[in-house]
Length: 312
Length: 294
Image (cartoon, rainbow over all chains, first blue to last red; front, side, top):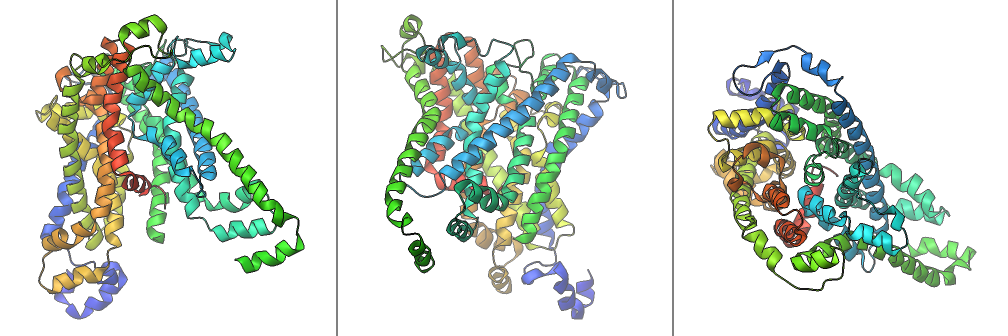
């Protein structure tokens, strides 16, 4: 480039970004290869398929023969499809319940287990151990608890709440929440780890100073610690919403969306339409809706991480 | 520190002697709250373990939640034998190991190129790659099934490895990029003056220095890929080729009332990731934090 023709300019050019700290250099061919191979894999396995989904969503297709273009027909049908609307509503409940409960639980536990004390390590490990189980394993763990003669009903019977005993997963009114509890059980540990790291990076002298000035525990948390957690909050918020839109495994393992689609989420409904009924066009339209809903939060996350990159 | 506390404590002499007693009481309250709370996490796991070691007759007679009246390996034997969990575990290993190695290898190459060279638009490339990892998998499922089919790798483990590699790349590239950028330029500059080419610098200097973050990412990637369900049931059709998580759900359909078998099978599926977690606990937690906290 210009550097080869006018070597005298080199120091000036490298001064503005091209050679920060002298590490970034003119790009040799092999380095292009280093970048292009992974990029080609990602384009081929991620971006190209994603674009395909947009196209398929505008067609009617069962996978055999040619896809028939139907314009926005699939999207129009979505909004008169009660199962889709139910799944959308369930997804909102899921995002709020899953996000809210795991953030509250994870934050409370992080605050409680922040300072080193006897037993803290043990408590922390117990709470974040489920995080390493797959969502399917978590689902089965909880299916066992929810059995009619399982631990939960037995416990309720033992403490005199026998009238609350329930077919938790078979009852349309409780199935979604029963699955939600299992998912939160697994997620709390993850959120706790994120907040523990956030708390570690807060300034302890501020907290001490507030204590000196007679601030109570709640005041110190609300006005001293909480504002310092803003960065973590954004990440936790974006991650939880993206996660709740992706949620599939645990519902698939526990109820498959039943009974009567009462625990159906967008992802499980999409999977059924696509892989059970082979309505590929319609399923792709649901996938595009999931993408559109996730987009805002993906951008939030990217903006946040970019800011970190700049500050770092 | 003590210097600043002293004058205050002098102004309020009451609080000083009261503190030890108050602290002891607070410790007591702390454990009184935390023990039941952590039991909420531990007890369901213990319950599943106990259930897995009970016999079918015992569970049929006394119910799943009763105290155990038996100790039997039949649950595990059935799960590993007829339930095919043994085979599924081996398949998961065959998918996870190559997927983790190839992803980290490709990601480290991309991260090296993006972090050490003046590639035009490198920031944008990095962000687009990361964005690919954040996409909801649902938008990829149908086309991925189609594309693997047209490449002739549908219903093969190669196809499954390929999608794991493609989908994970963005995140690992992003994390490794952050780390490689923090390696001082003097190190690579010195090697370059000594005549090392970009490949040698990558292999001899950058990669060895990245070992801690590679370990953290490997621990994380292993659990993610091992735990995967949705890609497995999208790409694999033949039941005999299903990895562990998908096989577990199949087994559960076949052994509906054999809770000891279901419990044993879910433990078999949970143990490998739990082992990775305990072996690499420190790496694992730091792996979770990269890119998300800071």
